[in-house]
Amino acid sequence: MSISTPAGGGSRPTAASTDKKSPAGKKSPAGAKPAAAKGGAKSASATKKSPGTKGASAGRSDTTRPAGGKGSGPRKPIKPVKVTQERAWGPIALFVAVGVLALGIIGYGGWAAYKGSQPFEERADDIAGIVNYRKSDPEMVKQGDHRQGPINYEVVPPPAGPHNGTWQNCMGDVYDAPIASEHAVHSLEHGAVWVTYRSDLPKDQVAKLAEKVEGNEFMLMSPVDNLDKAISLQAWGYQLKVDNADDGRIDEFIKTMRVNAGVEQGATCSGGITATGTTPRELGGM
Image (tube, rainbow, N blue to C red; front, side, top):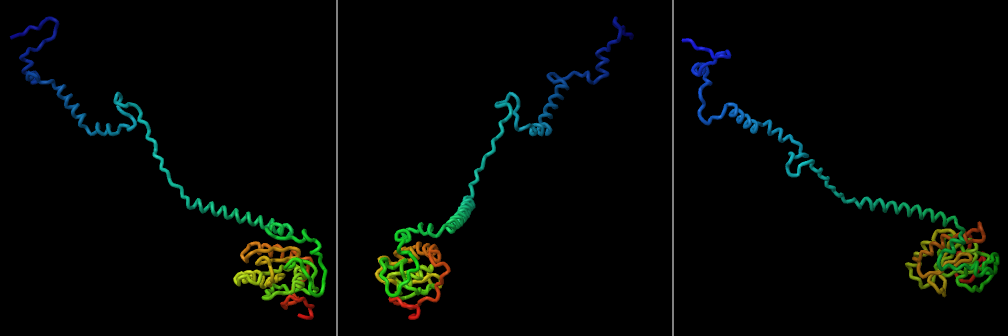
C-alpha cells in the first residue's frame, strides 16, 4: 500500500511508526515533571548539600556581611585593650635615693673644700657662741709679755694675756688636777687648745673630753674651779663655753683653732711643765 507525501516535500512519520521506533514516545503519566526539571531539582539539592559550598561559605571574610543584610558594610576594627602595668617604685626609689646621696656627698665635699680654704678667722666667726677677744680686747692678745709669779686674770680661764716664760706641756696631756694658768696661756701662744671643765662635771662627760685631747699634739686639758659653764675651751684670743661634752661646737673649735690660732709659728708643745698646781714655777722647779 502506498502513502502519498503531502505537498511541500519531506515525509512525516505517522504516529504509529513513531511509537514503534522510539520508546520515548511513550506517554508520561499525568502530573509527572519533565526530566530536565527533575534533574535540575536534584542538582540544586546536591549543590545545597555539597561540602564545597559549605567550605566556600566558611571562607567568607569576617569583615564583610552579605549585601542587604542588617549592618551590612565593613566591620569596624576592634580596639586593642590597653593593659596598665604598675610601675616598679622600689627600684625607682632606690635610684633616687642613691642620686640624692651622691649629690649630698659631692655637695658636702665642695662645702668642706670651700670652708677649708677660708682663713681660720672667718671659720671661727661661724661658730655660734664663740668670743673673739682679738676684736673686743686687742690689748689682751699682745704677745711676748712674760712675767714671773702669779698673774691676776680678769677672764677665767684666760684665753690670752701676759704669762710665764715656761709653757705647760701640751702634747695631748690630760691633767686630772688644776694647773697654773700662767703656764697654760703660754701654751695657747704656741698654738695649743686648752680644754677646761668644772670639777662637778660627770665622769662620763670628762671621759668624752679626754678622748678628744689625749694623744693629740697642741692639746691639753685640766679642771678649773669657779667656771660659770660646765666646759670652756680656749685658744689664743678665742673662747667658747658649752654645757656638755656632746656639743658639736667643741670639735669645730678644736679643728679650727688648733695650731692655727698660735701667734708663735713653729713653737713646740713638748718640753714644758708637766706638774699640776695653780702656783706658777720656773722650768727648773718642775
